[in-house]
Amino acid sequence: MMMTKSTKVTLVFGTLLLTAGLAISSFWLRALPQDLTIRFHPYVGDKPLVLNSQSYKNPGGDGEFSIRDFQLFISNIALEFSKKTINEAESYHLVRFDGDSTFDQFVIPNIKIQNLRKLSFGIGIDPKANGAILFSGDLDPNSRMAWNWQVGYKFLLLEGTLTLRESQLPLVYHIGFDESYTKLNFDIAPEINAKNGVINFKIDLRRLFQKSSKVAKSSIRLKSNEDIEYIDMSEMSHVKFSPVDVKAIAIGFHDFISIL
Amino acid sequence: MKIATIVVAIAVLFIASTIYTQQNKKLDTHLVEFTAPFVFGRFNLPENNPLTQESVLLGRRLFYDPILSSNNQVSCATCHKQALAFTDGLKTSVGISGNPLAFNSMSLVNLMWGPRHFFWDGRVSSLEEQAIHPIAHVDEMARNIEELIVDLNNDETYKKLFKQAFGNISEQNIAKALANFQRTLISANSRYDQYLRGEISLTAKEEQGRKLFMAHPDTKVVLRGGNCIDCHSQFLTSGFGTAFDGFSNNGLDDDQTLQPGLFTLTNNEMHRGLFKAPTLRNIAVTSPYMHDGRFATLQEVLAHYNGGIKRSKTLSPLIIEADNIAKTQSDHISLNLNDNEITAIIAFLHTLTDEKFLANRAFSSPFMAENNDDD
Image (cartoon, rainbow over all chains, first blue to last red):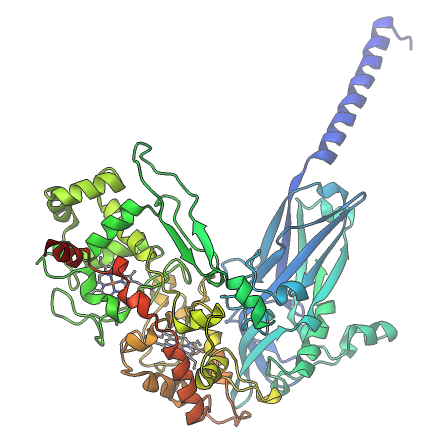
């Protein structure tokens, strides 16, 4: 087939236009900052957590439990990009599940999500803020998450009821202390980025009651999920200030949150 | 954290409101400058009602004026008396009809902080919205608002005050003025405040009580506590400000007698019997206690928390669980504090009395001041 001069010109121009268009639009896409939504979905094992009305098996013993209140602090969010890292200012978020929706979330505005590689945050309050009287982000010394100023904050508040055959036990887990502050790191794969700027996390309450620690688990790689031993809630129905008990629960923070 | 740090932190901040969005730009108003302890935290002011001196002046006059009632005998101050930290000393309040109301009068103090829901059951969400309720209520002031506006328009003083504060007389502006006067009712000079500022130390007994108030008991680490802080915040001593965290069921009634409480607002069964945890500031002068005034003394209140708790399905798990002797698994709920500890907590509660607040002339009846000026 012969090409006329005019077809050639059109083709060349067309290609040029197309490349330019692609270049501009891809540049545009990459450069366009978006709101990044960090969304948390609470679970008990595989089942979504529903407050009050749902019961779940005591992970390490008899009876069933229900949850009335569940709140925790997520703090010091750091977003790592190919070239730089952004630390959110006043980064103290109270995440709670007593609202009308099944999840809770917060939004970090103006993020070039396409370039996001890693995300990290802490469960709890870093020692510096935990030892101060500070109104920053969701920190409020007059709030339900505050103990008195000498003790600092509850990082996690979990309250409910364990129903055994003949009795009901109140469940009170108020987990705090500087030693419990736990940093979590997540790799953000490109396909996660694509989901409308939302990163979905699962919070699994069962993890708080697993007996094997992170360290133990990685050394015995063969352990499958079924082999994990769990704490019997009836034997540890309230944890507040006993350092040993707090540690037993807070060790679960390492495996507590995962990307959905 | 050391006490020295808190002393620094508490250095009183000078807070001047920066919002200046007066709808009527021509009005020449002045913002109130007030001080509040840093530890009270952020405060809530509605954007459409700047805290101006003119509106507070007007609100104060309205608060003390029986013109707000249909028989010209009941004012807000009938049920909210300054000497009693703006309560009335009655089991449940009595207004124009003479029929006792269902509820005990509430102290009006530090209203810019704490829960953003007002009344014992939280049914209104702003002071502006609240202010119209008692005026219109048949048992309280039974006043037709339209007629009230006509009467206010016939009063030269009010015409002038409304003009200066808002431009005109309206239901909305009556509410705004009352709300703003009440916002200025800040109590922050009790012995507890002075202690927090590092100016005084508490007596040994008061200090023991403070520690008990501020601790949830944990027998595992031999920590004794009264668990009050589980619901009454450490500095404000009120319920918590976030969402409905400031509401709870503290065991006054069993399932048969449980009142609706917060359920009135939310229609959520889990909120049945939850009431606003009130501020405990000036608590020694605001008897009788609880939403229905059932306890005459602080001794009775403490006896309630220390063994009088009634079970119901929404009772706070923190109350069931809090015990100063290792759990006996018995049905009887008690903190199991000893008599010495009970008197210590009561001694601490007395440090919350702010004599200066109770006598502050800026909060008293402007009519008395006017009369005094006459003689």
